[in-house]
Image (cartoon, rainbow, N blue to C red; front, side, top):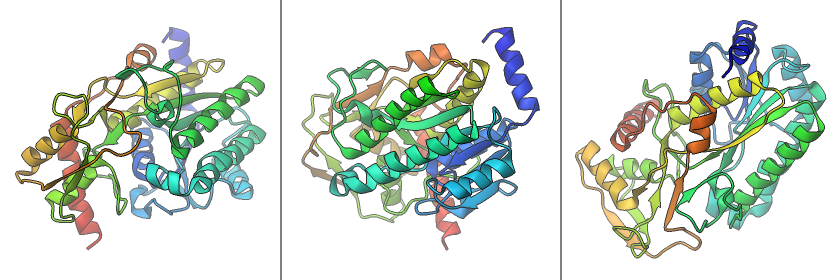
Length: 349
């Protein structure tokens, strides 16, 4: 950043512009709330608690239980938090994320992820909210023909989840061209781990994330872990994915917010990953190692549309933001998730 940009960010921070986090009681959203608070930003959260948890919201954070498509509620939040007319920002995490469910119930995903995002954006434009950060996904790439995916890799989703997110990216681009709003769309790869201080973590019952499932198996909450496909063109035959620690991902959102404030005429779209992958077997070996147990592995056939590898090319985010990942280590990711999983057991009794 230039000195002028630094001055802009410092001024914005000193004025304590509020950030509204949608879905802030959920997995990634709650980590973004912590990252904002840790960096001195005042935060408000809106969440309907369908998949989020009230205990994930820190004391002192303004919480509004409700829906992001409730325009009257949004207007009240903007007024009470002084968000709008050039002040404040929105980080948008609210939505549905389970790929198989999106295939079974596509209308739910186009409603929750696309139509409600449209309603939120409409309210934001009407209020004059200047900055918008969107939780997008590598699922917008579908099954890419390259292993390391960069931002200009063709976006060809293979499920309603990916399409619902891509449609919102398209809306953001069009809205930014027509109104005084800039945005950052961050395309996540495989998010895992938990807050290093165990303040929050993945809490959803029946979650489908591999590391979450494996840890539940290691702690006796599941009987085993399904391995879908052992005949991929990879070193051990199982699928390879790019796992990013959720706290590093949350940190990227704070840096993205600062970048948007520093250059209001610029919008950004960037991958969020580490640029290297681990196979399913490598992940399960690491869980065995960290938990000092042996997880039962249930070998099964490939799932339709699963690519052999899906790894990010993080060159753009690393050259654009002063983002320095702190937890780029598979065992560390698993250890933090394990600590949270044990704490979650105590929270639920």
